[in-house]
Image (tube, rainbow, N blue to C red; front, top):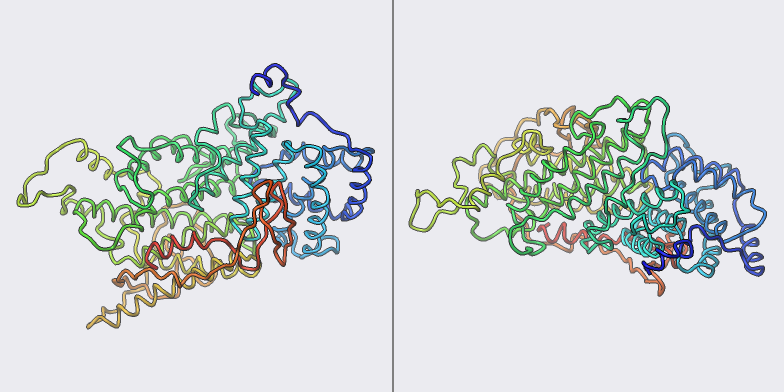
Length: 631
């Protein structure tokens, strides 16, 4: 097929070929379009999407989208391209409605039509139009990849993370069918620069989602590690502001950095022996990955997106830049959490050599620092978005991702462990039996252990490594719970996360109480936690019951005593069972069913979000975080 594309490129380019509707299908489509909401309602949602939502993933180029939208309403004849574009802007309307009400639109209706009825009407029309698209063009187009992606984004905002995973699978399949993964030299010469860049940006987003979801769900990614080559990376500015210098960030810079970040973590593997077991923690390998990240990736981040003291000269002119900066920071800290998270999967019993204890303790403190950084970044983003109720999964999921490891650390009696300055009093290498006090033999492994223990002063976790405490982690977890409980008023995902965090906090508090009762002479209460200077410049409170204390710590309602907590046994019964059973469509990865509040039709090309209230398919995810960590 590559040779055919080379010789006859235009014949294999479905994006440039429009197919007229047969007479019988045109009658069917026109009848379906009569169900469409009045244009003023759709206009409001389209404008809101462009102004308030598109900045998150940059799936659409606004000038192109708005131009096509205006042309669509003036079409005299219908074609496949027109039908697919109708599905696209209807998907946009559904997705945008999930961000309402908002600070700029405080009511739950548009032009007198309730948001629930808007979503229902759009979904019914989409359900009627999709079979026409499949019938006329089974392979798909760029527009099809885009509206599948929007269906996935809507699905994760409603609840089931598995549904988004299936949409990413479906969108990746269609993207490869139309050649988004191919070298641009194989694309038709007639394709203009805007379309080429839109294809690159779409594939870039797929790579980012695939990388993140595969880690969150502990699955293999759909796209290979090397799928994002230099040729497939976005490369041009589509929106040029007057009087903006060449060093000004582009609106797509954050997405490009996210893709490069995902590619770094995918491709970096230490050259030290075979692959280890998934749940086995190699402390040296984790430290090597982190040092490589600090030395190889951090210097590539532009000053406007820097983790510490970013350049804010463009913030006033690029309104979305502060929010995009926080999105990147959240992604960085989330990847760092994944790097050190296996420290929590180590068995609590058994002998561990002194030098390994130091490395393990160091990894746990690094995990705590990363989780705290993640929560601070997401709270900053939430504040920039108005701090109001939201279904945006980019707020809800990171709160949970950051809070659960902190609770697991608080349940670990060895946390926070010996500080880095204490390590000189402990042997960093095993001492042979019968040779106490002898100098260990030098070698490559000893040198590696010594090198990985040297921290960079400018690394994103270093400022917190020797100051993090259990009480600070508990405060942050309580603040996260308070925020999720607030968001649960509008989000099923937040409700499930809040319910789980509440049970985990109760479990940890129960263990602390048991430990206090078992202590013959309980220690006197510690003084309130003093405000600490945050290692991050953009710290904002998560809000709710756990208020920010003015510094880097989170002020919760519980005492701040660093009690010694015995590691509890796995308690899987502490996890609620959510009855979400995805049904696979025979033609593609889709889910069946509908959400009672936000009904979405099921079928091919990623159009379903399914499930019942609170039926988030996080159970396997929760089991690893809780049962696997001993909670």
